[in-house]
Length: 485
Image 1 (tube, helix red, strand yellow):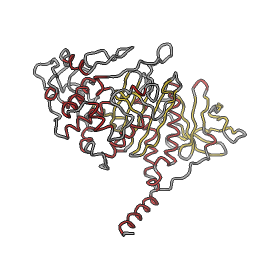
Image 2 (cartoon, rainbow, N blue to C red; image 1 turned 90 degrees about the horizontal axis):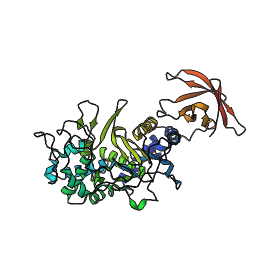
Image 3 (cartoon, rainbow, N blue to C red; image 1 turned 90 degrees about the vertical axis):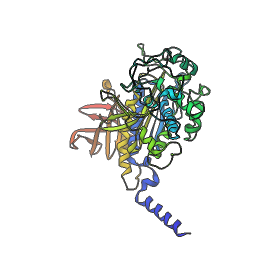
Image 4 (tube, one colour; image 1 turned 45 degrees about the horizontal axis):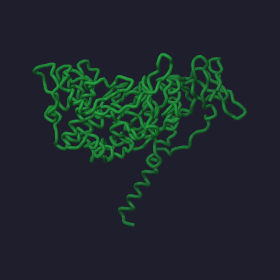
């Protein structure tokens, strides 16, 4: 065996011995396993309590899918389960793919961000509300600071049929529209703007928009379940049925199938949590210069995820296509989507290489809050696992007998799970499972004490054990709560 080959094998063996997680994967670490258990219980409970037909979700760390899955129904009437491979409308997440296509054209030298839109689209003859203001630029479209209206001239968000204009109708009616304000003055989210960005891609590349994104983005990334328009051939198969918000009668009603036609670059895409997880992993590869730069250069992706627009109130910030948000002093990038019957969210923490994805086939749900809570559950466990150089130990079954869901009567329910070196209890429903978590430390036979935030011990919690060795109930604050699941 050549000396270099022996040296390489020795290095790999040393890495595996000194850092078992490099060989076994973070997903097997006990902290991550515990976090995933909490995540599954919480998502399932929130789906029930918010009466959501179906929910699919994914968690990605770098190139590893730590977990993905689904709850409830993609099609409630046919009892078709929601899974990680269920296809949903992702609506405005479409804008990320369109923005990447624009930046590909920029890097190819076919456009500049400070180019006027009219330079590439001669039919761009929108009326101006100002007489001497700056031109509407390509960058203005990507940052939503162009001053143009939110929508094309058609009432396509009006039900029950949601009739979207064709490309030709968008172009024809544009000259009847007027800018809202001078360009580069205020943020105004605009589906019309990203529709025009898609038209610029088609004009500068010489290819129809859908053909371009398939051949230059979707196919190279292996996003086989992602399409730049709702996949008609998947109706009654993998494509979820959309439902309304909860009505006054307590029902969620099915929403009519729609296609966005001329608005597709802004709102037409459909995808799965599996594919958006792959999309996130590709971004982490590019940012770390570990591949994927044949699709987009590292510096270009970094440029897109930096702040390019701040509104005068300093509350709205935007990159090039990417929404940029702050939560608990941390910065995230990504995008959300909201279309008739569907809500979705892609959230990335690039410096931690963590991404969370949520898709719901209903309106009236804050998927942005969901992805933040998934991050809050998973990120600390991922960080702990990534820094742990000890061998991955088998799951500790010591506390498994106490795990389950306990009925709190008028107050809902609490889920008890093994957590770190003890137990944790989380009351459902909640949109802050980590913030409302109670930790328990074992102090005697079937006896625990609650751990305060300063790590001192508080009241006692005692579990009652049945003939099968599992808990049947728990006594807490002089009350007894029966295990129901």
